[in-house]
Length: 68
Image (cartoon, rainbow, N blue to C red):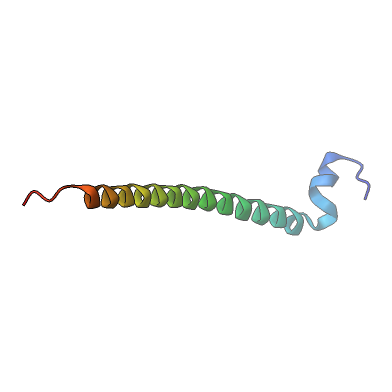
């Protein structure tokens, strides 16, 4: 498709609302998914670190001498 001016390009032959709306929804969806993925990744890593620390405490407690 060939456009004579930038104005024609942005108007997209009368279909601008569909074209740019589609781009907008796509990029917004991708941004939301990226944000949620990053946050979930951080939460999972924190959970794994906490489980490892808990397991280390359990193992250390098994080797402690009972003083009671």
